[in-house]
Image (cartoon, rainbow, N blue to C red; front, side):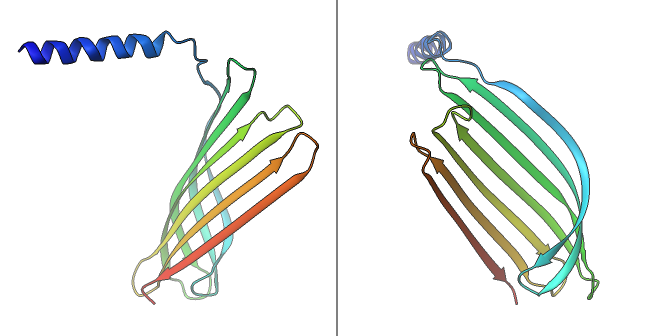
Length: 156
């Protein structure tokens, strides 16, 4: 019982310290849920698909004690698709995380990571896509841009 109380007391003290350190709280600047339909290419089968997805976007912004602005955005999608030639049915889900530091200044860093899965129902192969993107502008306005796409086909 004594050990339990000490652990609980230590946990309460840690929470109190963390909540009173003066760190800025993230403000939600955008929170939206909507549906969208569009055509997309399946890299594993070479077929054009029609996707119908539900999309949830939430974005937050925080200004740190040194004046740096940090912007974060998460985009989660899920839904269904159909191959326009084969009629094959797919289940689709993805998540994208976007980070931007100091978006109002000259120097900024923008990064995003997107992971998407296209699950073929039946004999159609599954597709997994990972997209990493980094866009950096230094204090002199020089841009560095890196874009990497990995596509993995499974079950073909």
